[in-house]
Length: 152
Image 1 (cartoon, helix red, strand yellow):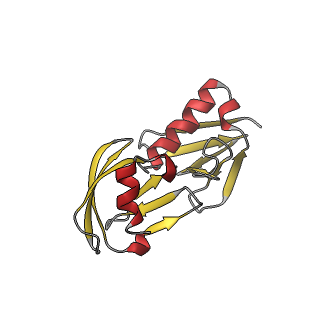
Image 2 (tube, helix red, strand yellow):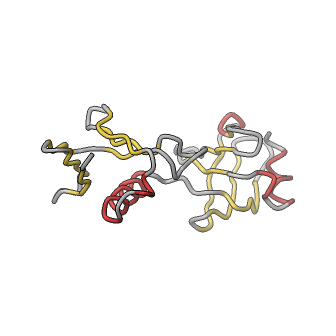
């Protein structure tokens, strides 16, 4: 199937699929945590699937670059690499962490904002709804694990 994914002059993503042009499309990962490099879906402005890409990393370079750029523009989930400090072991508490995008500080409203996705993967949501990923809990340093254990 031939397609072209690009941004128009207004910055909206558009998909030319066969001879039809779909403006305002959204590119989303099918499995963003468990298999982030696998299947990707391109959705219409109304949320209907227009295109399914089973292996986006195997696309020709121009298509792969467009798909990855669209994904990066949409996604923002920094990965927590270290927990430096927690203001209190009761909530709300202020957390200071090192992430894949630098140092961050956020407020954790309650323990329910820490969701366990698997035995070693967590998502921590701050008061503004920003989600931070802990991909491999056992791989964190001892200090970070000790702080997290108070909330799990």
